[in-house]
Length: 232
Ligand SMILES: [Zn+2]
Ligand SMILES: [Zn+2]
Image (tube, rainbow, N blue to C red; front, side, top):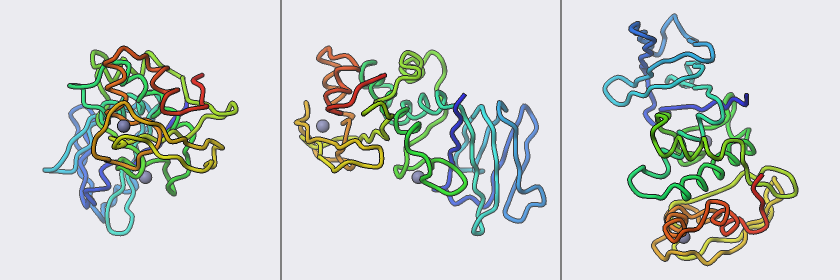
């Protein structure tokens, strides 16, 4: 099982965190004797920045002190991370399931291929890496999108590519020279015109939703936004 280590809540620059396992709560703060704090893989816990945000996770946990704040790193299996990202990136209200499936394959490709963005963990939970929300429940579309595409990634010359995607390309996506994975993005005229939000490379979330609404499959959506790549 492939595990990914994601730093969470760093935008809050927490000086205190609360960890709850079953009914036992542990308060940690900068300077706590209990640091570094860890939970083994497979733990079921709630992590909170008191008064600000609280999330439930299943996985391993490590909390360290760094530069006068606390850093929480959650280790979870790749498929749980994919489902969480789909839930965060595409709100459940709107997009059809085929758009969510396309997003799941793109997010999985990115997670599998783009390691080493940080020291000590793989990814953060901001736009720098990918948004991450609480893992969805099995009855949610985001969970089903990940489950029904389990293991599939975008490939170029047999290598998984660190697939980029953005909220709205604004009318066309951008080309780029080949990255470390060897894949070069091409300019694609998008199914939707709008105001650009994000970098504009690879899958466009509003465009993917529009294509799915027209009956395109997630495979058609992916080969449209990632010309020359294949899904395996
Ligand atoms: Zn990052
Ligand atoms: Zn677009």
